[in-house]
Length: 156
Image: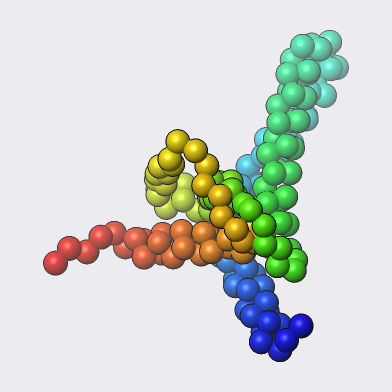
C-alpha cells in the first residue's frame, strides 16, 4: 500500500472518529432512555409475577425485548460506522446508506428540532463505492447543515 493511500485512510478514519465524537451526546441520550425504561419494566415484571399477573409480566417482557433490539440497532450502527475496514467498493443502495446515516443523527435532529425531508424516485438509486465511507460523508454533510442552520436563517 502506498504512503499516500495510508495517509488517505488515516484521514478517513480520523474523520469518522470526529463525527462519532459529535454524535456521542445524542447517542448517550438515545441509549439512556431505553435503559431507564428497562429498569422500570423489569422491576414491574417482577412485581407482576409475585402477584400472579402473568399477562402483565409477559407484556412488560415483550416491551423489554423491543427496547433491547432498539439499543442493539444503535450500537450496531455505531460499530459499523467506526470500524476501520479496508475500502470495499461494490454496488450500494443510496437509500439504505442515507437511512443508516440519518439514524445516527436522529437524536441530534430531534434535539435541534430539525425536520429531515426525504424525497426518493420510484426506485432505489444504486452507486458503486464503499458504504461506510458514503455514510460518513452523509453524516458529515447533514451535521454541517445542522451546524450552519443552528442560528436560524439570516436574511439581508
